Image (cartoon, rainbow, N blue to C red):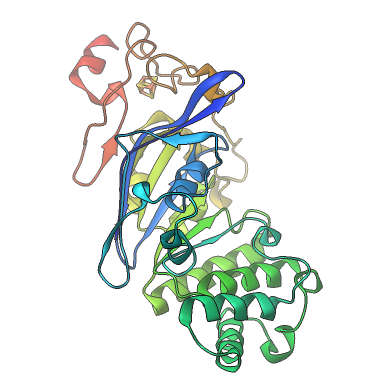
Length: 333
Ligand code: SF4
């Protein structure tokens, strides 16, 4: 349904040209969930904003970038070729690809009721009258678990609790009937109980509606609950990918291993968590060689700090960018 090839994004800044996303490729199948995981600054959100052409004016995609999307009517759309402001973009956003954010107020206008905003979206994308649109909006609010939907529909976003607002935002994104939903850290700001409820809701909705989903998070524990496939990003590149269960059971990249060690577990309450040491470098100070070598305890001097490893496949459907999985890396270690 969606294939992204060689996605590179550059920004013109006062400090010169920076490229926070470099040669990223991934695909999402109909009805499946791809998890994009990594720390802040790994390039996950910027990559998915490119799919909606929501990047700022000082940015550019590389000429090698190809973003192919198969629309609901079966047409293939080259998203990377759509011009800013084109009519096709309006149809794509919402009607084909929906997006939800960590902060619901990024989706809602505070000066209109939840219902007004949903009804407008439904009328725009589904071409129905006001009354029918209102009925559909109530149905959707009900579906996402908002009690008393016929009354809540006329409330303003600030009148809802945090968890309710998050549900209402999901309802707003789904009201246009997208075939692909991009969820950018939608549960990060919620407490754990509400987080579990929202994750379960999203899983159920995805199954009922047959949607594909890209789920962005810094938390591999959340990915384990929701994603079929996972791509681990570090400093604008995918360093490991594969079926979620396989990656979590046998992570191959030292960064993925570090992210997993940082997840608290009830079985190991007395063990200290060992987060990945250090901070992710700025894209303006991108290290030479493997981008992770400045934080990697297994880095091979003279190799990892000089040459970028290619992606290799250590097992079926798996991909990893690390010298330790090559003959060259093993003999140099
Ligand atoms: Fe660590 Fe080297 Fe592998 Fe990079 S290539 S993750 S520095 S061992």
